[in-house]
Each structure stands twice: as C-alpha cells, then as structure tokens.
Amino acid sequence: MRRAALRAATCGPRYAQHGVTLIELIVTIVVGSVVVAFMAMFIVTPMQAYTAQTRRAELVDDADSALRLMGRDLRASLPNSVRVTTSGSVSALELLATTDGARYRDSGPLSNAALELDFTAADGAFATTVPFAQLTLPWSSSTSYLAVYNVGVPGANAYEMANVITPAGTTISIAAGSAANENLVTLSPAFRFAYGSPGRRVYLVSGPVTYLCDTAAATLRRYSGYSIASSQPASAATLATAGATAALVATDVGACQFTYNPGTAQRNALASVTLQLTRSSESVQLLHEVPLANTP
Image (cartoon, rainbow, N blue to C red; front, side):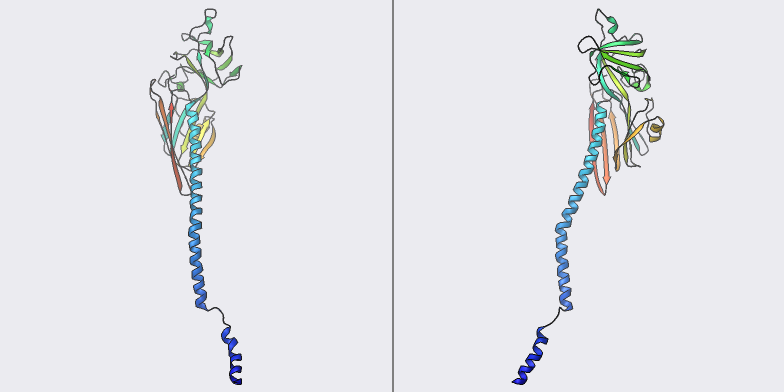
C-alpha cells in the first residue's frame, strides 16, 4: 500500500498538468477566423455602403450646384441670345447676360416729346415708363450695353453689334425721372435702334458668358469679361485671347450635353443641360431644363 501511494503521489501531477495541443490551437484559430469573417460581413459592408452613398450624394450636390448656376444665367439672358456648339471633346454654351430691364417710352408727353425713344434717327436720351429695378441711381457705365428687340436673326442679332444693341464703349447713364416709375436714360454717343419692341422692352446687358464643358480635361468652366463677337468661342484658348476670366464650376466631368430649342415669340424657348460626374467608380447624371421667354 505504501508503494501504491508513492506511485500515485509521483504520477498524479504528471497526468493532471498538460498544455494546448497543436490541433486545439488550429481549431481555435479557425473558429476565431470564422467569427471575425462574420463580424466583418456585418460591419464592413454597411460601412462601404455608407461611404458609397456619401460619395454619390456629394456628386449629386456638385452636379446640382453647377446646373443651378447655369440655370440662373440662362434665365437672366437676353432673349434670343443663347447659342450652343461642339468642337471635339468641348461643348460650349454662350449667352448675353442681362443685369436689368425696363420699358421705354414710345410716346412722350405733350410737354416733353423728347422723352420718346426715336427709331428714325440716332437718339441720345429717352425715358422709361417702368424703371430699372436692380440699379442704384444715378448709374453710369461704359462697359455695359442697351439692347432693344434682339430676335437672333441677321440684321437683328445682338452678336453682330449693330441695329439692336449699343456699340462697345457707349456711355450709358441712368437717373431718376420727375414722374413715378420714370428713369431718364442718356447715351453717348447717340445710337439708333433699328426696330421697336412690341412690348417696349429695353435690356441692360453686362456682356457675354460662356460655359465650356471639356470631357478630356473633365472640367466645366464659366467664362466672362470678354467682348461680344459674331463667332461663338468654343475653346479655352480663344476665350483667353479675348480676355475672358475663367471660373471652375465642376470637376470629374465624364460627359455633358447642351441643347437649345429657340421656340417662337408665342412659345418659350427651351435650354437643356445634361451633366455627368464620375468619381471613385461612382457616377451620377442630371438633366436640367430651363424654359426661356424669348419675346423681345
């Protein structure tokens, strides 16, 4: 009995204490990997979806901001002044931006017939029956233009700088008149408008604006501050030579399309702008249609 007790005392601890076997370690690693993989499926996938959704939202916001800017310029353009063209990877849209408008007097009061806008000879002064609303009077400029009855056809096209729009360098001064809603307009030198507007509308034009969409450079830019010309500029180099100032509107441009339906005097024109932005394998495409009242 003494020997059995001694053997039990000697062998017991050796059999009671043992380490982790290689098989147990491999099983633990495999089970842990499976657990981590399942956790990744429930965590990584939603994070990737959130990131993709955020990226798409940013693209939509960028495209919408660009289209809204173009829409504001189009709605404020001189009637019948929008034109579009395409050259290689570049799509161009040009318009004549207006800053204000009024209605001229076509029959002066008996006491002062000189306030009527004369279409038979060069006239250096006339009055309005509806005032310019966006100007702080008195106002004067030699870099703006006045336009009456631009219909966008030969002989009545503002881009020709004749008949329907004052020449470059004409000093235009506008002051308050003596009657309600009356403004006094003076031109130096005097100018003869060739045609009267059925609605007696006169527009104050700040100058041309061009949007260039270059898919090769993946950019949309806005150009302003250059002179009105009969031929439409369709490249950044041409606009730079004309002295235009460029402003970046959108990047990551994958595709764009400008279309213009001139309509008629009875039916509004329609300008359509399609813009596609692509970033990090995400792509969005927005279409913006702007109805334009082209009654001169």
